[in-house]
Image (cartoon, rainbow, N blue to C red):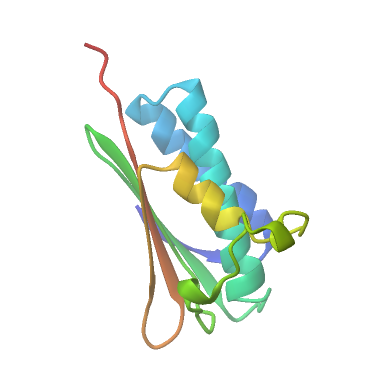
Length: 136
């Protein structure tokens, strides 16, 4: 499933709800649902606020793919893009009290796979994967 969302904070809630419905249907438990929801919120806020800068002409693209063993989420903005290596280390002492800068760290902690790449002509695409643990 793929769709376009507006560059608004309402789209953050909409994306989280859609992803959580897919994750719940796929069989994820409460703890994983919480982690997935937080990761999607962080990523969507980044796309709307930092990527598209609330620009009404720019969209955020949400892709959700649930299979028997994993949930893949792709979020892409139409912003200028950024170099992930140029971001300050949120765990460095001088950054510990900053209000922002921990979103990508949270996403990495909550998801099993996390990739970020620039897309042409403009934008950033984030791919997140959460594996469904099978009870044995």
